[in-house]
Picture 1: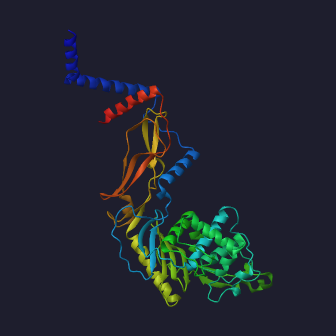
Picture 2: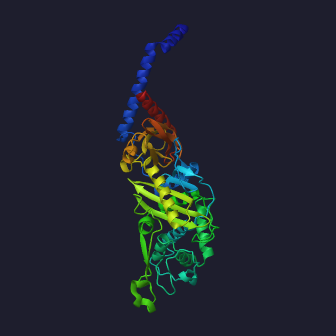
Picture 3: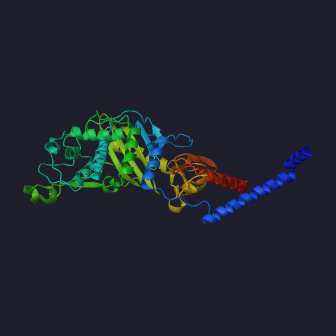
Length: 475
């Protein structure tokens, strides 16, 4: 009799009818458990998790910076393969980048060490703006002019804004003299005012370069007059990106200004006030592409015999900004040098604007932050967030217009319907894929924004049941 019962039970356990009844019963129990859970909590599952505190957000940023060092890189290759552009340039060394992403669009001998000449003054301005941010100085400060900064004491071939003894000049005016006239006299006055000595100021310049991890750049003085200053096109493009991202207002306030007249009446010592503005010398911005190249609003030129004609150039159109650096441009005189700089800058910028545009991720409620339910964890849900910046330099594949290219990007999220057990901050649980016209451009990880510990044993069992319900519902 016992043997007959055993045979019967074995038969029933493997019979299709029993399997079907068991499956239906399991689904009913799961559905009932899910219904009771939602009814008890009076919520729509999964619920929105609480917002991160400021300290938790900082912790997440620090963690992701450690796990994904590319987050801190100033320059990087495009994340998808391209056919290298064939551009004819006069300059011996060149590079052009997207300032939003740091993507390198074209380069030529970008690692050759070359004196930056007066491009050096951009690093000087960075140090000054940093000092202003730190409360060490104000742009409206009156700056004493040491004898080393008087125009008459400069070498004959040095560029100058024509500073003179006992003149009254603000830090803002000196920065205009740096940006527009490329004045070496202004450079000396600024360095002495901010740091007391040229040596101490140059130490701050090199500290900035070190903090940006630019290994092939070094300065010995602030104006760029010395051939012992050195950089590369790649390094200086990386610096310029950092400069523009940190101090974007410098463009409108200083680099886009087309001329400067100095000294004006208010700058003159009392003994010369009667001269009024008649003593002023008007100089035009050394960047001849201002007002010529559409969208151009900076950045800086440079020339000494040892470097040739250098140019750090930036322009913005349709919300996309590119930046190029050309070093060791040819020219037997300033007229020739400017002509070649203008040609190279135009070639690089038109190539970029006719080939690429910026995609920027949606913000606010449409931002790519995904709520995923948790089962068997101490909280009911967690958000998955992009581990890397979503800014993307988009090629003109599906459209030949900036707006069309960026608008055609398709974003696909691959995320789980539920995560069982504990969740660790920064752990990858999904991906975000960007594609254009069927071509995958980039995939970035989606990570948990917070740590959620495992629940107690009873909740884990309920979580198992909940996860099974969700799996059954999906499949």
